Length: 181
Image 1 (spheres, rainbow, N blue to C red):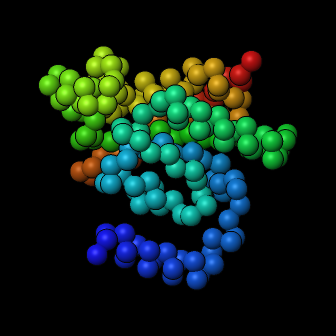
Image 2 (tube, rainbow, N blue to C red):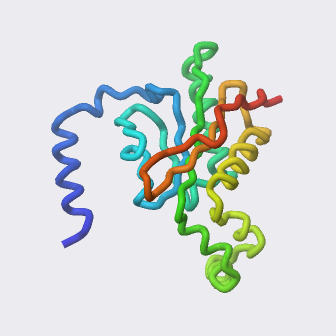
């Protein structure tokens, strides 16, 4: 039996309830959450996000990458296209966490083997390691704020989720991105 089968059963119950028909294209809370793909760090559970509240992006480490910047820019431009001057300001909440698996990218042997396997640059992979989540999340807030794809309709904040306590702590209060030229 596939691990997915029980989840497909849950999907049938979800579809039957029909709540998905009440959702709009824009999140109710004008919030984009970027978090790690680690199963222990599910934003819906740790923040109590309900369906339709926020857009959630996840990757290894919850890091700001070129793909993340493109996705956030897409969301802002979509809102501007759909809503014009009434488009909301979105907050991007970046969440890193303790005991992140990307810390292995700081290990020379692991990083070398991983770089060989995926054909990547070892030096670039080293910068993706989350060994100090408070430091790396502030770095990512600055990276997103400095992006030339930024918008006056965007604020960015940084947070750390502690796996031991279950608490999310704000380490970078919401800052407004510069409007792109």
